[in-house]
Image (cartoon, rainbow, N blue to C red; front, side, top):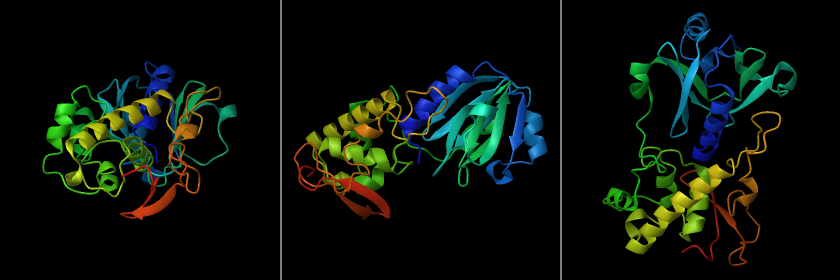
Length: 269
């Protein structure tokens, strides 16, 4: 599932490709991916200019000139591609937004969605999201204070969107590895040094992963050299049976709260 770095990468590339452009055509192949009648959806967004794009957690928000906002959540298996009809991936397209001869294809939205709201209903439409880890106000003192009276295992809490926004399976594992903390440890068990290290690891992993385009390797457009660049930089995620580059032990996989979790049992404590 796309997480914060993947959605930040999409946001950056979408700014380059579609902000300031007008939606000239809409094709809806899966009505369950939207939240209103297709004719109303098309009527409200056709010939509207995309004026900005924001991210909240794992959501992208497309702000249109008429005060409408498209809220995207790709969920498990969802991705996007931008290009001409000739460049379109040979995949099932759930929704297509056209900008002249180029199109934004929404692919794999079996669980994901692209919902339309008036701008004054956006906050109400989004789930109750926790703090943004890369927000300017997400400082170490804020984080230490925020952890006061918080309970639960690291893996479970890091992927809880009400606890922190945007972190999922991949980066929760990478954060725990970087911090040298077992994902089975609990927040209440961490000492002050470990809390500080957890904060620094959250910042480092998310910023580094964003810099390299996240771990998902579906190119966003034909000559895309950014998306997926972090995949080969992951230290433990999806690396079961491989050797830990830090200590030489074998990386293992364990189910925690029904989630696949990868870690080194030797150098994470």
